[in-house]
Amino acid sequence: MTTRTSDDLVPEVHEVSADEGAALFDKTARKLLGIPGDEFLARWDRGEYTDDERMAVTKVAMLIPFAR
Image 1 (cartoon, rainbow, N blue to C red):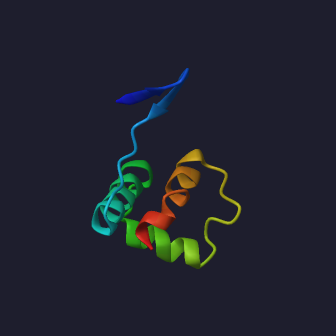
Image 2: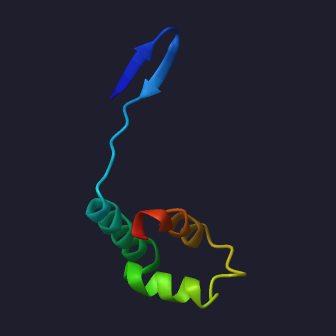
């Protein structure tokens, strides 16, 4: 849903709870990489994705703030 203000379209914002954010992160990691979110975080923290250029890794990494 969008809201019209002046001549600009502004998307409606939905804030998620900490639990919803963590669930979103986990679901995305499972869908894109086939691993649970906590496993992705462990690998990320060990530096296993430093040279990984896959878009799937980037997409999951962008959601890390929802998990922490």
